[in-house]
Length: 326
Picture (cartoon, rainbow, N blue to C red):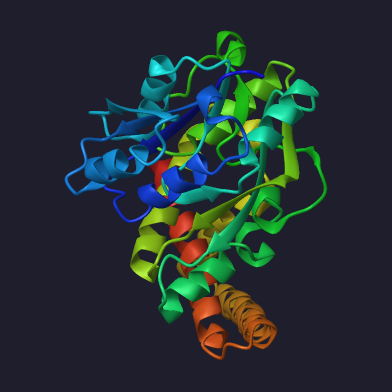
C-alpha cells in the first residue's frame, strides 16, 4: 500500500480548510499511510490556527504547513510537492471535501494503470445560503455554462483532456515536470496537456467524488471567471491545439464587439447584433425556467441566467484581454 501525499495550496481559507482536513481524517485509507502538506500563502486570517486545531484531532495523520510567499496556486502546489514524501501525490483544494473513499479509489485507478493522472467528479455545493450562491452552484454544473467538462457535468469513466486536482505517481514529475509557475491559473490544464503530449492518459472516474464549494456571490464569480479566461488565453498561446468548443465564450464576446463596431458602417450589423443578443437571451430565460422547475426554486429563474451570463462575459472578456495584452 503506497504512501500518499495530499498537497493543498491555500490562502485565507479559515472557513473551509477545517472541512477539508476533517474529510481527509475520515478517509478509509490508513492514516499512517497519509500525509497532508498545505502550502499557505501567508494567510492573514485564522487559517493556520484552524489547521493546527483540526490536525490535533487526528494524531495518526501527519499534517505540515509550508510557506508560499508567491501566493499563486502553482507555486503553492510545487512547494507542497517538494516538501512531501509520498509515492502517490493527490492534489486537493481548500474549497473541497473528498468522499471517504476518495484516496483509496485514486490509488486503485493508478495501480490498475487506468491513467497517468486520475481524477473524478465534483459535487458542487453553494458557497453560502443566499439566492446568488445557490444560483452560482447550479450554473457551475450546467452544460450551457461549462460545456462538456466531465468533472462538472458527469459521465462514464473515460480518457479526458483534464480532471480537477488529480492523483499521480511522483515519478510522473520526472517525465513532465512540475506545474508552470508562470500561469496563475489554468496550471492544472497545462500540466495535463504536457501529460497527454508525453503519451500519457488523463483519466476521469465518476466514482472518485468530492464536494466543491462554488463562489458565494456574483462579484467574486466574475473575478474568478475573468481570471480563468485571461490565463486560458495565455496558456493557449503555448498549446493552441488544446482549444475546446466549450471555450467559445471568448468568440461570443468578440462577435458582439465586432458587430457593435461594424454597426457604425453597415446597418445590417446592428440587426445581426440584436438577433444574436435576442437568441442568447431566449436561451438564458429558457434555462432559468428549467432550473427553477427542476429545483422547485423560483429564484433560479433569474439567478441561473445571471450566473451563467456572468460566467460567459467574465471569461470571454478575460480571454480577449489575454489576447491583446501580450
